[in-house]
Image (cartoon, rainbow, N blue to C red):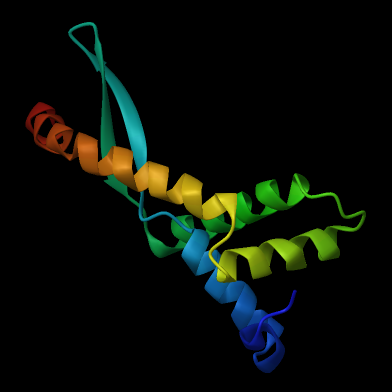
Length: 112
């Protein structure tokens, strides 16, 4: 189950890489205008990105079957590094919807 990268690298750097891979670049903010809800992508700073990535990692590890938290976290970190985690799919969905709604940025800037 373990990959070569997991055996040859320090655990802290693996965790940092997994959090960086799971962290989205922006969030979607909802606002209502003329009875229509507009989703506007807003850029996140580094601290917000790390927090959202870590929260996504914890939430995904809670869905695993292992008894102990450190086992669940380790499996989830390895799954993220091997590109097989649902966290990455969720991040892709956020980025797709942000790309779709990027035209709303102009409207949001004009309102301010």
